[in-house]
Length: 224
Image 1 (cartoon, one colour):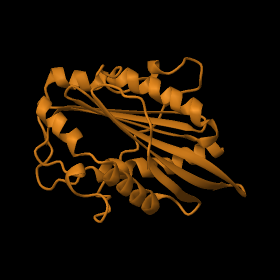
Image 2 (spheres, helix red, strand yellow):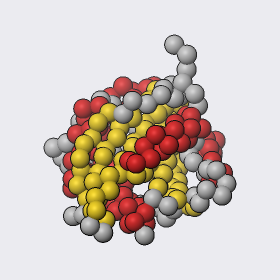
Image 3 (tube, helix red, strand yellow):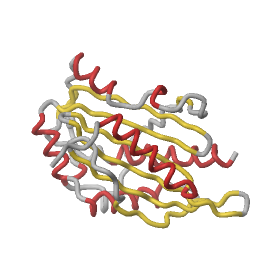
Image 4 (spheres, rainbow, N blue to C red):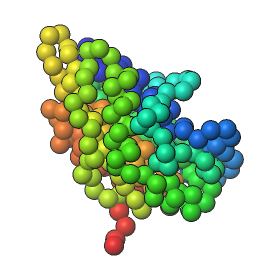
């Protein structure tokens, strides 16, 4: 029961984070799908076969969301702008197990220069500020944001940046700490986002699984 409750409230937070990235006004980003790049996007997200059989993982409902969710004072600027971005493929997926939920998404940029530019604009200060603001705005009364920090994470793909929010949740008179991790990675033209909600009590186990999944999506890090 507690696990289901954690997943339910985390969905609203993930929807907010996804929508906050859409800061560019007007026609950006442009979507000009090609069959080959859509297939590439589909290969660059998680599938049920990526999880250990018999471990209880199932497909989760799309968190989706509609409208505009943002915090203008914390979620704007180059890090969150869509101006100039042309997507030729886009896909997402979500899976859950008891007390756990994982989300993945992949956007294929029209050119490698676009993907490199997006990565170069991301700063840890901007992301942690936005993540903190959205957490405070979208968490229910039973949950409280403790910290948001950049997360030490192995290098995967061509570029990686990771973040962790710690959230305290009141469940049946006790406080349970959860960790919400967001890993951003680039593999050539593909921009990948991996997010996971897990109990902080199993932090190392959850992180080990997260690294394995990130490597599945973006590939091992390139040698210097």
